[in-house]
Image 1 (spheres, rainbow, N blue to C red):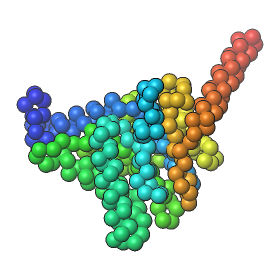
Image 2: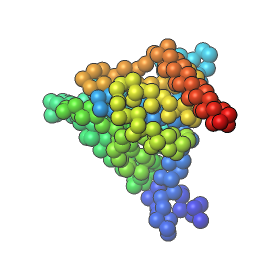
Image 3: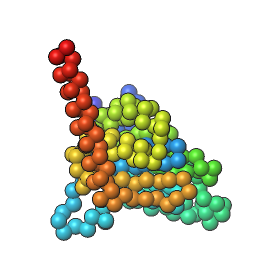
Image 4: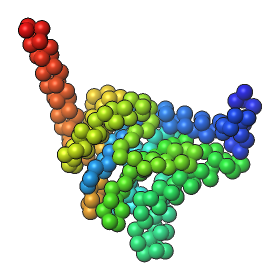
Amino acid sequence: MSSRYDRAITVFSPDGHLFQVEYALEAVRKGTTAVGVRGTDTIVLAVEKKSTAKLQEGRSVRKICKLDSHICLAFAGLTADARVLINKARVECQSYRLTVEDAPSVDYITRYIASVQQKYTQSGGVRPFGIANLIIGFDTDGTPRLFQTVPSGTFSEWKANAIGRNHKTVLEFLEKKYPEVMEGEGAHDATKLAVRALLEVVESSHKNIEVAVLRRGKELELLEESQVEELVKNIEDEKKAQEESKRAQVQGGSQQ
């Protein structure tokens, strides 16, 4: 039945579906994974990087983009669509500063991005943006914010979230680990949790991971490859230590 109703974005199917929007969501699900974790004074984005060709300049392929001095975005889906939407958001940030003479709030920019995405679901001759976004930043009062937007134009606020390929697996991990890890939260804990969540679905290699840390009152920090490598090594060592302790407990119980 879908073939009769998926030719135009403005046509609903009898059961209330817009198939082009659902196809855009499928493009998101096939994109590389992105994770966002919100702490008390730190917000972290960790994304899976596609391996680049030997002669390709790695810095030219970015999944984490700065929108303003205090707002950052990571996406999953079609990179070309993301570039267009990011440029629109950057222009809106500068336009807001010029008009209001103040920095835009994270909520304002999220609403703007979501409204642009929604506009492309109800106009003839266009198609939806094939991307979902994780938008992070601090409000003027220092409140950390983490939002998600999807191709339908819906947005929501989260403590921690994942988008892209295998996002359900990552989300299940975050639901389990977020409360216990974030009780004594520091910048290191939030960063480690984001990377640990990503390693649930990504090959254990620092070369496949990009991490950005935004701290209250500071500029966005993109972690160097060596820092990510050290973080991944620490996580792997912790996993091995936990496995060995479990094995020792099992052996001790069987001996008794």
